Amino acid sequence: MKKFIINNKRAIYGGMITFMFIALGIFLLGNISGYEAKNLLKASLSGINMLCNTIVLASATILALLLTLLGISTGTESKLKDSHYLEVMNIAKIDTVLFIVTLIMFQMFNIPIVESDQVPTNWYRTIYWVTLFMSSLLSGGMVVVILMLYNTITNIIKIVGLGKNLDLVYTKDDVDQETKDS
Figure 1 (cartoon, helix red, strand yellow):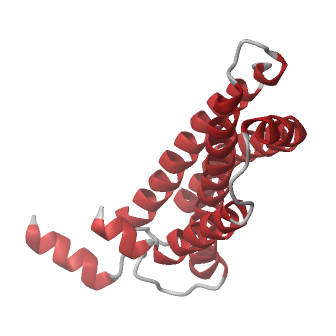
Figure 2: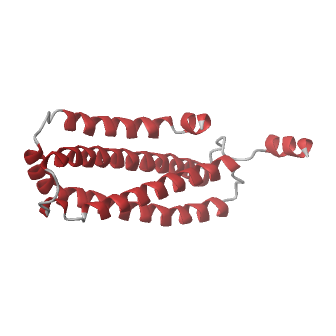
């Protein structure tokens, strides 16, 4: 886990900054009543549904494009180290979790809770804050995935397109060391 955090520092920082920026905006709204939260929830549901829809579509597209990235990775003349494939696998794991959580959240927002008279008014405040918190968390998660994907793609461009020898490519010394270890 520590190695994952070190290797993806920029992506994680980007996601945290996004989350904190959105959360700060939410915090600045201040304390609201249950009735006010119900009205705000009604007004924001279409935007939140659109956000969830966008993240679900983006996540599914990213998973499909990772297969293309793997095709390019295996088709290159350079032999890539396991760390490259582990990075791609980490992107796929985080993206899949993001996809599933967003899909569940999307389904939860399609429950017509604001139309019900059976829900106590004070619950709307909690539902509203949880909704805003989750949407900022999902947005931050999407930024993490995009930045991790950006790092992986730039590495592949440097290796395949520019012919640079990064730490992700086996060198003659690495092959010699592997032979000695065997």
